[in-house]
Image 1 (cartoon, rainbow, N blue to C red):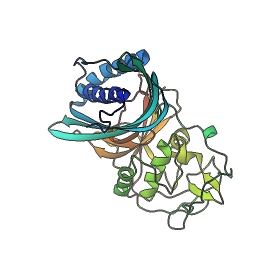
Image 2 (cartoon, one colour):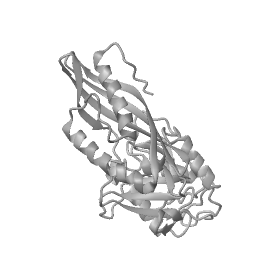
Image 3 (tube, rainbow, N blue to C red):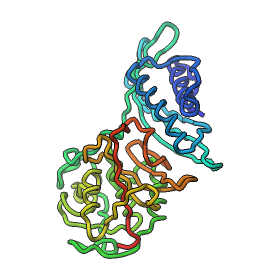
Image 4 (cartoon, rainbow, N blue to C red):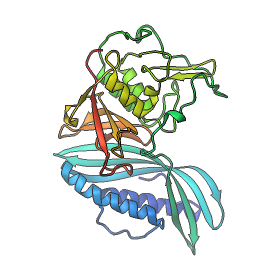
Amino acid sequence: MNSLKQAEKPWKQALYIYVNQYNQNRVDYSSGLKEQIVADLNFLVERGERQFRLQSWYAQREATPLKSETRARLLRILRETEEDVVADVRLHSVFYYDKRGMTHREDTVFKERLTLIRDGDAWLIVGIERLQDERHPLQRADVPAAGADVAGREPSTPFMNGRVYAAGSSPRSGRYEREAAAAYADRWWDSGNPEFEEFDVDCTNYISQCLFAGKAPIHYTGKRETGWWYKGYVNQREWWSYSWAVSNSFAHYLNASTSGLRAERVERPEQLMLGDVIVYDWDGDGAFQHSTIVTAFDAGGMPLVNAHTVSSRHRYWDYRDSYAWNDNTEYRFYHIPDYF
């Protein structure tokens, strides 16, 4: 169902139709649309290519789409006149599919900026901009310098204590609590834990929090380029390592780490367990732009993952439904050890 009701303003009817068409396209790609409400040609071409890809994708997965329910919420109106409207919308899509007799549920939340114009008595959507895009990673340059003042922020308690880390290069040992990591991922999949900083591109920050919730030991060095750590805000200054929040740095850290948080690179997604990690290189150029954590498995034993940026819960691991995916996309699978 769609929480954008047929409202008193005529242009909102176009949003209502848009959401219904989105649900229809998720389940039946071959059905004709009774009313074409979108006039953004670039969006239509991209959507058509994606739908063609997903038809074969579901067949390969032995998955049958059952239904899609999208709840839409109007976030803000940037401009509203008698002739045009620009508005930001939050869409929470709940998608159900069958695999081998088992019904699976997948959630995604994404935000779009829609531009509408009046066309006689009707309204058309002439521009669709995705406000959160998995293809654009957080870069080191996007992370404020360590010690930078953060205006208007209350200091948070640093997440540093003797139970989870030892300063320097010898983090304390312990068991990785996979279920706790997955439970944290499900608890915060569509929002940010207020005890941590939240980035516009938040995928790796979220994954690091999940690993920490599973008792992965902090490796504190005090240097952003080394270790894996988050110290929070102290006296209105922020401190965390690049590996905590930047996907490419996170992947390099897992490759090189021999103590504390570390991982074994495996070849196939079937080798992953709950609480393991996947990183994504959309362009196949060796730079990783996205990170996810395994939180469940489908009826065939394939990983389902959670993520931020485009908030996702129990999404199929290979992300072929993402607009960021292309034929050059490569993956790296990391198995987190049972004991550190």
